[in-house]
Amino acid sequence: MLHSWNISIEKIRDGHRIGKEGSMIRLEVSFRGWTCRSMLVALAGALTLLTACTVGPDYVRPTAEVPGVYKEMEGWKVAQPKDHLTRGAWWEIFNDPQLNSLEEQANISNQSLKVAEAQFRQARALVQVARAAYFPTVTVGASFTRSRISENAPGVGGTTGTTGASPKATSDYLLLADASWEPDLWGRVRRTVEASRASAQAIAADLESTRLLVQAELAQDYFLLRVLDGQKRLLDETVIAFQKSLELTKNRYAAGVASKGDVLLAETQLKITQAQAIDIGVSRAQLEHAIAVLVGRAASLFSIPVVPLTLVPPPIPVGIPSELLERRPDIAGSERRIAAANAQIGVAVAAYYPTVTLIASGGFQGSSLSKWLTWPSRLWSVGPGISETVFDGGLRRAQTTAARAAYDGTVASYRQTVLTGFQEVEDNLAALRILEEEAKAQDEAVKAARQSLAVAINQYKAGTVNYLTVIVVQASTLNNEITALGILGRRMTAAALLIKALGGGWDVSSLPSTKDFGRKDPKQSQSTESKPLPVDLPNANTP
Image (cartoon, rainbow, N blue to C red; front, top):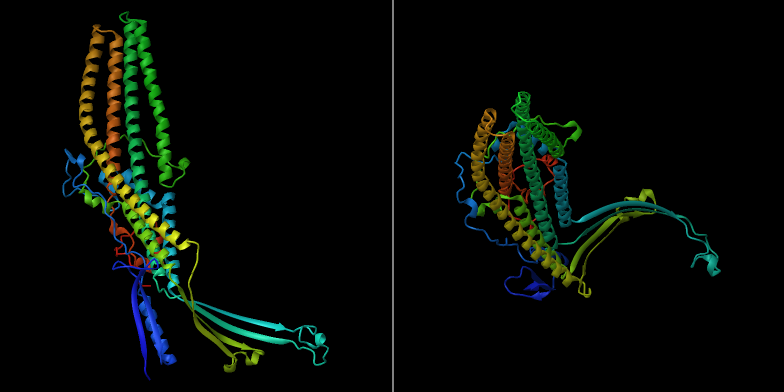
């Protein structure tokens, strides 16, 4: 038998012919002299070819402005090869066991992390929801009906005036299976899956961003608390020194070599310092309560022993600016959202093309239970359907325009995130460098103030100066020592913020791969701790 067929292929986009950049083809097939079996084989081949088409633009990662070097690196102490951030446990670089313990508790019990982890598991499930559209939907149902029509119904003897047998009750047993499948001819499902996978990766990056934020905030609060502990110890020691000065002044007053005013000045200075030491307790309690929340504990059941801060900022490996795009989870999340928005353009474009549905049903129907599941009681139907929207009031064009606008917005957001990342690195590089210089100058000021205080006390004992001079020098010394502690705290928090700005030892290879989203949710996803997984390029062209 003679078989003939025509195939014409044209590139289409948004319902119009386009040039080489198109990613969808139109297939026209005409049949003449084909048997039913040959037509089914040809139809299957045509569907296979058509399902290889995916409309919409393919994803290309957008560019962002990346400097060659960090401006504030000038004068920065370069880390040695042995200085590196432990992958994930970056806080260990500070060598503080108490901080290490708190960070581990936060990784396990912080409620914000649990929320972010639950959102990631939800995103994984939504990928499975999108992938379900690749496959047919099959339903099975069984029913039994016992019925009798009215004798007065149209066509029955009661309404026509004729006589005859009364209607009898009948039974209807039905077992029916229905199957329907919409072939992904234009790539709508593939683009939807691609968008879902990219969104899930973005939410995985959000989880790591939340984790890094919690860790950095905990480190900052911890260092500030230790600074307060240091200030409290300093004030307590100063109170003891001032009590001795008060006793000295009282003795001199009793001996008639000091005035009552000197005694009152010494007592005033003592009480002011005692009040300052007491006031520290307010800020410390608030920081302790904030740390309790970060580690997932009730503030009423949590406490941290008083230990003054004795650490100094360690050398931090900074790397080169281009590495920052791979090391910050917020940048990685923004980039994945661009990929998701790009795929949504394809979903919108697919609405321009017709929908093909294959429907089949079959089962058994009988009037009695004994004949129900027999071969003569079988029934079936099968056939395709096709539909095309011919008028929608501009809906599809508006949806496509909206999808492209959303894509442009994610690109701008990505570039803004990159710029913010470089700003944070530069800010904290500058802070560490400048504060280190300030700390050196402040240490010299503290030394000079202590020497001045010793001289002033000796002069007062010798009677060459009045007690007001001692008071002024004591206040200056105390302020300089408090300032030195404050600078140390600022240096430590700047170090933690710099590590956060650099990504905290994270890199993009820790993101779940697109293949991982094709499997069932693994058990380890129940944990808030991330597992490094290989990264593959987004690919939704296979179920």
